[in-house]
Amino acid sequence: MEISFSGMEPMVPPVEQSCDSPTAAAACGDANKTLPTPFLTKTYQLVDDPSVDDVISWNDDGSAFVVWRPAEFARDVLPKYFKHNNFSSFVRQLNTY
Image (cartoon, rainbow, N blue to C red; front, top):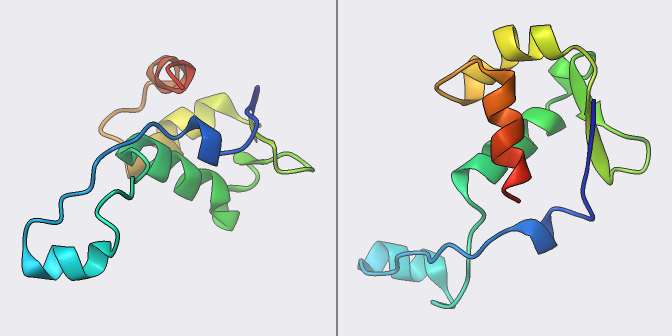
């Protein structure tokens, strides 16, 4: 199953970063910056992990990722990043972006 998108950045919905504490404010720099959602961050990390390239990896031009082994992906990879191992739930969440 190939999941295509026109780049990660345009699909990232804005999530406001809290800069309330002095430590957070120093890390924030510009208070108007946005961060990707945890779901997108985790998805990017798991797709970008070379140790699971036989299960899920970027396509040749990096515009999409391919789940080569959906059953293994659900059983072995999803639970390492999310609180479930349901492939359909993962795809449903992707479809919101």
